[in-house]
Length: 171
Image 1: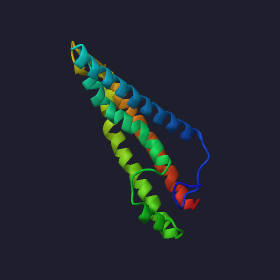
Image 2: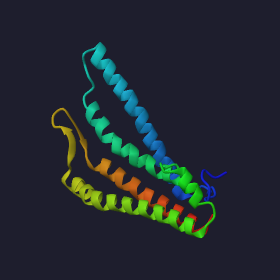
Image 3: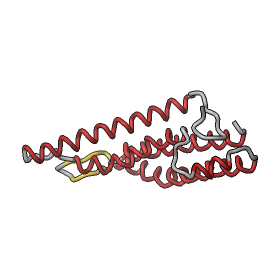
Image 4: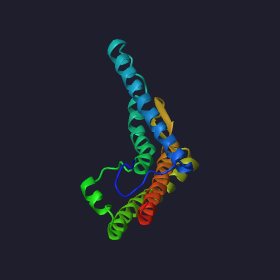
């Protein structure tokens, strides 16, 4: 059964396995973040000894979690939208399928703009060895965060384009 009218469920392929793995990594990061925050809270309350770096890790992990889970959300057709409008457009007309395909292409273009903006920062961060945090207290390399954002955006582009193609084919 399809999650939405107009698009049949697809068989799992290499892209599907990759985005599911990214999603699992994002979910694992959420779990680790919850455990870390709870441990920090207990350390602050009971021992008057907070865990160093929790605030920094929480701040930087938000973008990573979003970009790790976004491609699978797109692949499954669960990105937030007006389902009534989508159902009416996808209900059979060629024009509706073209419009929906256009929406998917626009989503891909947004991800392209993110990659275009983030890639030079990723390269510079890697070359110069930039770190996040407070020197002497807690630091973390900047480039892995930016790399995961670029990888997630690239996977999202592929998912958007696969969906656009499927709309155009009417499958």
